[in-house]
Amino acid sequence: MNDISMDASNATEVIERDVVIVGAGPVGLFAVFELGLLDLSTALIDILDKPGGQCAELYPEKPIYDIPGYPIITGDGLVEKLIEQIKPFNPTFHLNRMVETLDREADGRFRLTTDAGDVFIAKVVVIAAGGGSFQPKRPPVPGIEAYEGSSVHYSVRRIEAFRDQDLLIVGGGDSALDWTLNLQPLAKSLTLVHRREEFRAAPDSVNKMRALLDAGKIDFRMGQVSGLKGEGGELSGATIKAKDGSETDVSCTRMLPFFGLTMKLGPVAEWGLNLEQNLIPVNTENFETSEPGIFAIGDINTYPGKLKLILCGFHEAALMSQAAARIVDPDKRIVFQYTTSSSSLQKKLGVA
Image 1 (tube, rainbow, N blue to C red):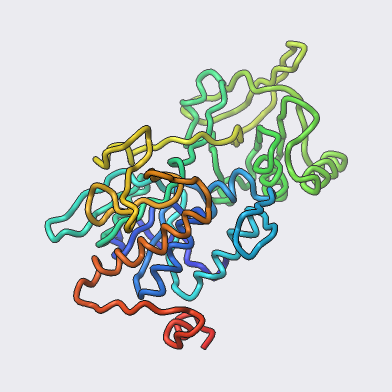
Image 2 (image 1 turned 180 degrees about the vertical axis):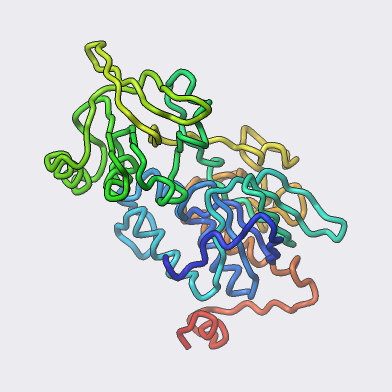
């Protein structure tokens, strides 16, 4: 994944691409491949901090059995293969971002803006956002809103932001354990809080965390965060409530709660796409929405006979790409080719 361009944008730059894909899950990733075969440039926007969507965030190690050619493959494994497959087309990934506005310009192209201040211009927009955008669940801690964005963070955008901090990590899943292991070497102190002694994370991560605990390099408190202390949005401590009702205070200047994700359609609901029960209706010829030039593929769309399967999303991406190419360059003659026999396609893939 290091060979893929990540977060290439900044708040002052206008990023122009043939196609902007909203959502970097498996279907969005495969759309890059199909669009790339037709010489269309792409940028992907996703609210998560890494590509892969549900596969990467919800079940990275869970086996998947219905991907053609793979009797069994994990969510992470599938994402890795898809990213390897699209490297020849040099897509750019713009992560930790949510698309806030989508408007049509006078010249017919679309203008998208994100909550990070990015501006994208494209002739085609592809919505591949699964069931919507993933948003972190806020823990039920009174007054936590006052610390969000300054001392309380639901994802790690910059590891250096946690250097020399008294860090409190809350949760018992893969994200909590992964960041415990990754941030411990640079944190001033690190306390892990979970409501029970058992963890839902990968066994290897749990073993490594317990080794740090045995070595006195981290602290562990069993219970739940019941209160926060600090002024002006800057944390100074937290109160941990145990199962027996007793409370103890711990010092912390940064808090990372990992309570899972919730699915929200977000701003997509305001884009005038004639939603049906929070899904986007499309035609089955090319999976275009009610708005010309905007397509929806994967779990976020609906049509008669729809099956919410990854392989169905791949099929939708292939048909969408043919239609997108005609929008981007209406005068260009599209010749259907097979990758197995076309030397020009093989050259694009770097296998000729």
